[in-house]
Image 1: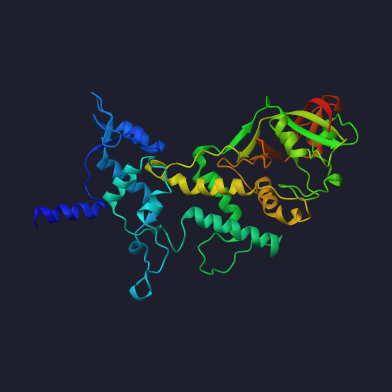
Image 2: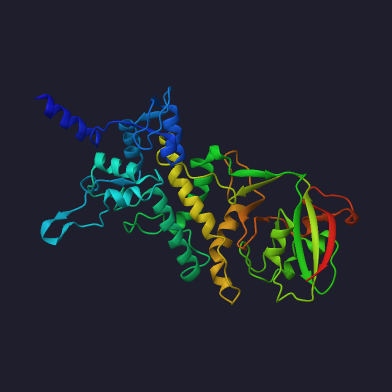
Length: 399
């Protein structure tokens, strides 16, 4: 075999043509790629911006293209490798095909079009399809499963959905497995990220009750008694009381007060503190999804993509027009799963869930699995073992 043929085979095997020159970190947008360039500088000039220095400031562009190609292959593949049928008489591949321009547009590699042009010159503009085209990748299968779960519990069966369904060949997670799949994502796949965190006893928790009269005790400002828990909420159905609050007063007001509906009424603002450290699932401060160009973080991408989408979905605003009794059902079931069934990697239960406020300008809100008799104030008497929250201050305002 001649040297020219050997070179062609080598280029084919690695997936792109050899390219000259170097690229500096200033010509790169993606943080992981910037870090790679900084850690692999070998040249004193950049072929794109023209920067020069006495010491190395740029990394091999040929190696850079290899890193980029490895990254986009996390999400994309050649149609042949995904088993896409090719029929000339019907227009070619029987799937939606994306070219390299479309694929690279999904990633913030560089703001310099010359960099994108050079990458495409090297890898070619051949067609791409999503990896795992027919089955969907793991985050897609989880998301499809969540959508199916919502549909089932809202419109088909509200209380009996845990029985395994017959295998219909679908790649999505079945409704009977969805709750466990969410728990496994938190405990197993993302265990190192410590999504179960603590609300310490030094943390101020704010809860507001709106009414015509003043409330000033733990029992009256805290979780409503069962007989008064007659409103369907995001995380709890009517009849099952829970403690809703926020970590700052602005969010507590936004989550509780409707200026038009509550005009002329009084806000009773309670500041509570936990009587012990509370273990909670934090869905409001999820870690960033790793870049596909950071190979060591690939195993976290799909679980985090799903969890980010899930956390966003469960806090979307829902109008109180009567349909909240239906629309809140999926999150109510998920909350009950985390309250009654879920255990962390050490077998511990959790005391609540932190989530992002759905109100514009709001920050982090939470729901605690705390009942009325567990809300305590000093004047109420001695603290009992099962009590969770102490009312430390009360203020009143007019709407």
